Length: 141
Length: 290
Image 1 (tube, one colour):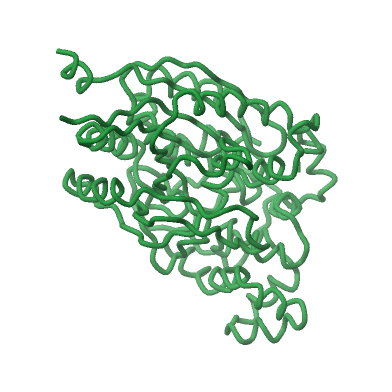
Image 2 (cartoon, each protein chain N blue to C red):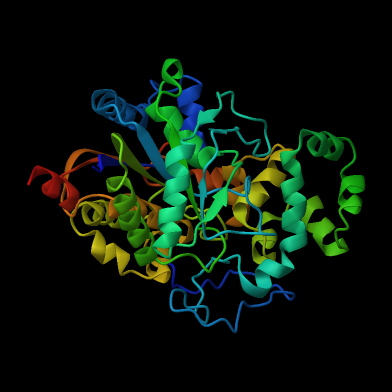
């Protein structure tokens, strides 16, 4: 996938905010790479609470509590309705765009029994089977 | 009389899948053998050269650090390091020994050279350090070399520039070479080559850029040090910007190096590369010889 190619299939998302107006000598925030959502600026702040929620899954107690009653754990962490919806739908693509770093999403995805590459396929808006057709060695999971 | 020296540098990926494959005995399977075999020369090199200290440059993956407080550079002075629970249980590994005596000197001398690094007395390690360490040291040999972890922010921009990372390595060499006791140090740069782990561009790779990167890190690292993060991300995917951690390793080595190992494998989503660079000595050794 070419980084600079606009993607006509990319869904519009009404609550998306841009990182602007950061000026950086290192990253051209005015021309974001296709399919790339860096965790910084206003996006990082928007995603902070949900990111913090993902961090709670480092604790075995949270993992067990979430398995037993996900709604209760989400409410205890003060998540917004939108954030809860993202989790219920396992919408990992929208989480990235919302401002959650991939390494935090992987912690949450694991609680659903979804591994990294299954998460990645969802970020690509593909089925896992479609995604795996693009890989060299199917058993190197 | 100063006796510390940098004897070489290793480059290694740090993806958790590799550590799991190695630690669960999948090294001989067709899927993993091309990569795991690439660690055999590295194990042999370490056995032969017997370093007194390994300085490993990696990033934390939201395990020791969260975005509530996020350092650009951090180093551990801890005497030993716990194994982190990243969200699916701890890897069954013994605690990793540190080297407090040198680490404190390193902290003082780096800040003295205006590299304002955060100092950690506790630093649980995640796959960023534990994948390469697992593969360098087979189970019966864990861990015979003390380790100082250097953690670099590659997750939440602003990230340190490639040049800053290269210069950090150079500053670290000066500290090693000023150490008054025998101290043979091996540097380790970790991280994938091309890869992107989020967004619709998840799974991006470019094998020709990866090959070019491996040429440049060996023969012309200054060219990489002049690259902007944007260029790394365009060429190799957003997460390949972690190649700046290889520049810390390379910056600590002599201007020219002897490459004795290079391997590359791209099975799934990340270009995995392994190298061994032997140091050809620097000014300090020349002074000593004179």
